[in-house]
Length: 104
Image (cartoon, rainbow, N blue to C red; front, side, top):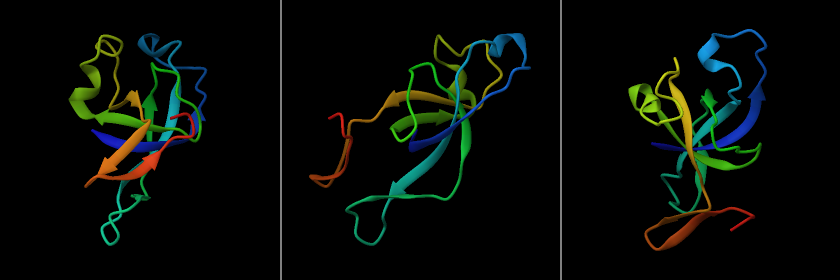
């Protein structure tokens, strides 16, 4: 699993039948800052993820990739590689809060 920020969305009017009605998001994985260990920083990569939860742009989410992305009841029949499996409220490392959503 990875923590990622939703940075955008994808609109595809033509797609395979299994993907009809699925929301597609652009997500950017984040990691713990190796020097300060007090904040999350971008990895500089982006992915397209299926979003069965309804996350929005700017939110931090949990994603999973590879064959694990097809293990949820919502995605088991889809040809996908990345899925949103949670919306992040807070992240704590070594008893310090390194991320807290505006909604938390």
